[in-house]
Image (cartoon, rainbow, N blue to C red; front, side):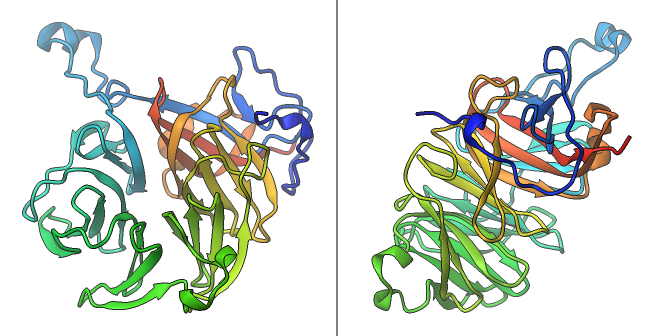
Length: 351
């Protein structure tokens, strides 16, 4: 059984019940008669959208070179730039929507990245890249120079995601079945999540932690691909609750991957096999989903999701005038015509 909106009640608050034409019109989720809360804005798989030149300049200088995405995985957006960990390219791509440019990120020192799978960026512009093939996490400064490395060449861990909060660095270690917490300044291992794992029941442990998202209250959400659910732990690493279960119905997971949390504590969880992003409230109840196969903005093997509040104006020309966007939702897909898809979360404007 596949995903279908017909059996799902949308419980997101607010908005007026509006009929939306789909043919030749803006693409909204969920479809009528439910309240539109998500609009598909734009999708791309090459640099062509960002490197447009006028016909005259094209005639004089020739067409610009076009860079194609390989197999995008993790992504982050900061200051108008979307950083994409591309496992096919073997590096990090930078789609600069603010300055309409597209390039590969040239790092200095630390060795060549082999399979960058995810990353995070702190408030000072330092960025942290997880390389699953090397079994290490690389910290780079704003000048792209490597500052330090967590992990060793013996691959004693298999890092697959990273998140930064204050002085702490969180690393999802699939090999160790845990989330390791490091001191960012000393790179010293402080603790592991879940806390007291040996004393927990199997339902509360981690088997294949593949993605993490930090909550405003200091808690952490961990996508456990091995258990087909999301595990919620508090700031001390104590188990709080589980979200989802194995299956292919709404609220269930067939191949869960990336996760992000918005300011209202709604969790966005990617399911690669079903090809959707599901949204859950802070109690773990399913609200809605989007990107399913057959829609005009379908996702093909989606891998990661990112929430961004600062870049709305960069996509203003794509936003339906009847729709008010509160923040952006970016999704990476490993295949298809839209390997980077940008959605807007919001509501229809009051008439």
